[in-house]
Image (cartoon, rainbow, N blue to C red; front, side, top):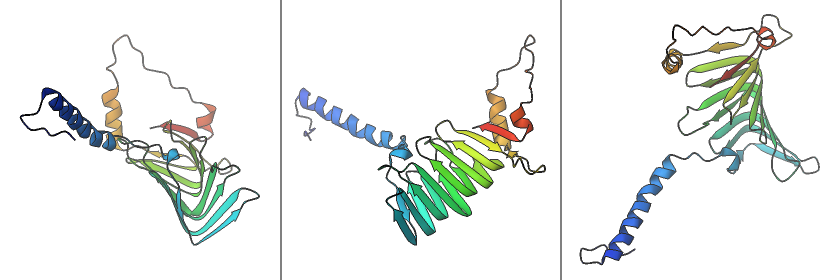
Amino acid sequence: MPNCRPNTSAQSLKVCARILLLLMCIPTAMTHALPNDRDQPIHITADKAVRDEKNGITVYSGNVQMSQGSMELEADILTIHHPSDDAEKFVAEGNPAKMRQQPDIDKAVVHAHAGTIEYFKLEDRVHLRTDARIEQDGAVVNGDTIDYFIAKELIQAESDQNNAGDKVVVVIPPNVQKKEEATQPPQTETEQPAQIESSPAKENGSQSVAE
């Protein structure tokens, strides 16, 4: 690195300034960037592992913990389907199986649990079934099955169609309601309130929630 003493030439001072500016920018970029979880290495610990090379399946059992970037999974049994070199589908089973992930650097961590958690890597989608629950920043969605589209930050929940008393339950905290009200533009006299039509999906217990 050039010596930045007062008696250096103008060219050396310019080089020093450029290097100092570069060094100042590096920490900022590191603290404001969340790497794509799908591009990170997978770490798994378990009591037992059985690999079926012929069928492209590996089964981990007993105190299973998996992490990939910000995503973490806890389960009793974890089955990984890898028909090619890359794993394509993860099936976590537990009582319940649990998952955590931070979708973005400025977003709250998503917590989810269910009897079975399926992660489809190519679709960037998580499917929860059997007593499914997903929570983020105080907002909670409960249902028989829940699909969480990670990149779109979209949640779709459905109730058990075979159980008439089963419903999708959504809890929206007051702070989220206030944020939505603050972002809505004031209504003018010529504007008419929007008409809400019930869709067949909602009537049979299906509900989508965009975060």
